[in-house]
Amino acid sequence: MDMVPLGVFLLLCMCHQSLTRNLFAERACCRRQSHFVYIGKDISGSPLNVDVGMCRTHCGQSRPSSFESGMQSYSRHSSMLEYLKEKKMRMLAAASRDSGPVSGGAPLCGLSATCEPTGTRVDKVLLIDGLREVEIIEDCHCEAKVTWCLRAPSLKTYFFETPYETTIDVGKCVGSKGEQEGFSCVPTKFDSTLVDTPNKVELIQTVTGCDMKEGCYRIPYIEYHYEITYSEEGLKEEKLKEIDVGRCLGSCTSGNRCLLRSASDSAECLLWAEGQGSACVPQGYKSHTFMNQHGQTRTVLSITSCLCQS
Image (cartoon, rainbow, N blue to C red; front, side, top):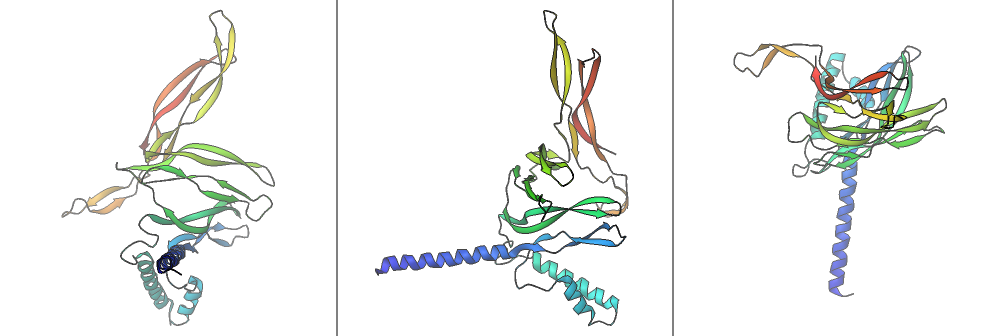
């Protein structure tokens, strides 16, 4: 074999092995970990904890589960207090190790990606106070960061491991928070999908569009009404009138206020008072007046703007 082609062949082999190792290491560093949360009491009155999972960047050998390691650690201590102290130190050390940089200060998913869920499933859990939907992360991957606001796929599985199992792209909004303070990438357009169930048909809301908005913002919401009009010849006509009445979405600040500030630093608050918080409510209105099917004048108000109000 000629020496030049042989050298090229060896170089390609080395590049392939290096790329394979990098892809494997990247996927291994971003993975699903157990994360149990208390969701309430089941119909027997017993507390119910569900492993909803979480996506974390972690490299290295697998460690035993928190329950196993906790039992092994507790057996080595003479008191619960000593066990809790050591457990807290272990958690702090693990957090700093898992979130710390690797190989030159780059994040474990790289500078251009974050560890995000690849898909979730929605489980319905019957609690003593009613039915509750719980979203559970199934797997994770390194997802590329974007610098603009856009809609990205987000797969959710409903009625998992049943004859009615369905996976829907419900969508999500991704992107930077923007240059202006208080703005973020949020859903602004929605659609819906019908899902068959053993008892009835359910309507699942999906995100179809995203935009940069403030914490409290207005979204379109269309209503249709029958309107009666008369032509120049005096003929009565009935048609559909479309009105964008709007809705207010988003979150506002908690409403907490500072009662006592530091004498040396006015930006430091020493005592906070918890407020009732503020809600995203309509600020401006517009009137739409028309004649309905019964010949009566009807007025429909539409939202033109929203604001945070306590």
